[in-house]
Length: 216
Image (cartoon, rainbow, N blue to C red):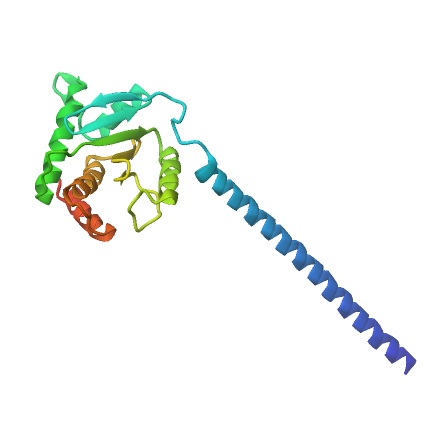
């Protein structure tokens, strides 16, 4: 009988010990998870809310067109932008990269956008800021969405976006296309055309239509 009692007590002790070890492990795991989550939140907050804006201490160059003021840091960014929107052409004589082609191309795109929407405004003028890559644009996008200056129903980072508060299109020159640019120009046209702009979803439908039928 005594032996059975000892075995029973030993088993209870073992069960209690195992339970305590499991609880200690869970507490450590929870603490570690909380710590990791806190670090991620602080990192996110610092990167997108406390970090200085891209180009904050740099003087941007300016290129004027009939409808837009293009701002950029490096000449290569402007050339990349020109290439991706079709302003640099390849002919039998070689590469036609005359800077004036950008003005012509921007006017062509803007005219097509206004014609597709059947919205014409005489005071329309927007700025375009060129960013070298997706990560740079993502930082700027997060800063704008946190301030509510972008009228959007999605928080996924786009290849370009328009803010009517700043009258500016923000562009990733590594990914931009003439269609994407026209899409953002459409947002600008819509917001200039209406005193009270339509809801974001309705604007997006119209802008997508412009993008899809740009050169029809």
